[in-house]
Amino acid sequence: MPRTIHVVGAGLAGLAAAVRLTGRGERVIVHEALQQAGGRCRSYYDAATRLTIDNGNHLLLSGNHAALSYLHTLGSEAGLVGPPRADFPFVDLANSERWTVRISDGRLPWWIFDARRRIPGTTFSDYLSFAPLLWASGHKTVGAVMSCRGPVYERLGHPLLLAALNVDPPEGSAALAGAIVRETLLAGGRACRPLIAAGLTEVFVDPALRLLKERGAEVHFGHQLRAFGLGEGLVSSLDFGAERVALDPADAVILAVPPWIAPSLVPGVAAPSEYRAIVNAHFRVDPPADFPRMIGVLNATTEWIFTFPQRLSVTISGADRLLDQPREALAATIWREVAQVAGLSGDLPAWQIVRERRATFAATPAENAKRPGPTTAWRNLTLAGDWTDTGLPATIEGAIRSGNRAAELA
Ligand SMILES: Cc1cc2nc3c(=O)[nH]c(=O)nc-3n(C[C@H](O)[C@H](O)[C@H](O)COP(=O)(O)OP(=O)(O)OC[C@H]3O[C@@H](n4cnc5c(N)ncnc54)[C@H](O)[C@@H]3O)c2cc1C
Image (cartoon, rainbow, N blue to C red):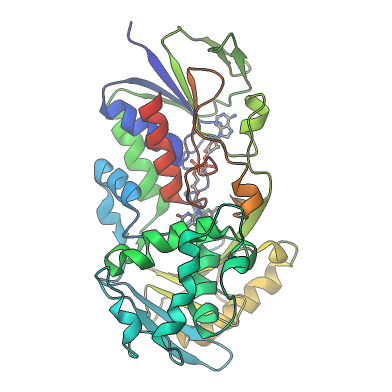
């Protein structure tokens, strides 16, 4: 009987691990607590807008090599769309000024020397303010190592770092911000092209489930792990409440659950315990024909607007301040801004607000320091998830890298 590797949690970390393991011929069983895979990266039919929407707009960049390679294996990379170049349009609602940051393709950042490509009112030397992030030590905040004021910060640094870290950038981990800058801005426009999935489940999740099925893996939904049977250095069983699965000594487990679950299952495991929210607003409307695929908005509640067929969707990061606001008022405020940016008039269309309270762990130095590596005190138990120590903030790229790493170790 070949050994079995149990993957607990069918978010992107668990799916990536299962795809990698079955690719090398391992026998895999995936256990997911809910009736749907994808975790914090999923789509569903929304009755209010009568559209299939994502729980949140998810942005990838062309330099997210693990995510792109995962989609390549699934054969669904064509479901990612974006502009042909690393162009980032912005609008400032305080004065209606519009501009586009156009990052040049190569590693040499010649775009910062070209006034038509950089932010209006800046000089090339302003961009050097990001440099200290590249060698920042683990416990420093962004605010401690770089200036968080001036046009380059306000018009590029703040929106990009807020989106990447999901914390107010000055309190964010400079090391995590440095990793983002190194893998994107410093790698040049070829690594910074924005990529947006046509639908998260359609691109990231369903093709993985299909491939796993083809490869003979089992995926059990509604299968919530309640506890491990823990022996001397080995996990000996999995307790699913009504069912208990005994493990052979050669079997292994990859635990790919969120950070608020893992410590209740694995004694002594450290995990980040502070989170930040992301709020998304979805409006059923036909976007203007020439409206960009994605646009950054400054001096507004809205931070980014994403364009989909029949829908404009807004993302607001680090959005804990909005969690207790009445939904109707929030939708009206955001719609006013969207209508202004898109040149649309008229009443509030059909809308939905999705508030993910624990969208990501708070990417502060203190929370980052709590992230564990993949190995545990039990030789056959490996951890995966965006919250494990990947060197990246909680992102799709980090989740998939952690799943790949766990698969290599299992
Ligand atoms: C609104 C929002 C917007 C985001 N935007 C972006 C973005 O633009 N770009 C980006 O890169 N990232 C973004 N992210 C982050 C990204 O979604 C996450 O980093 C990633 O999906 C995490 O995957 P994961 O597999 O580590 O964890 P999860 O997705 O949390 O998966 C864990 C899975 O484990 C299951 N589970 C839990 N307990 C058990 C149990 N006891 N037994 C069995 N199963 C269990 C859960 O149901 C879940 O399916 C965003 C997240 C949110 C919420």
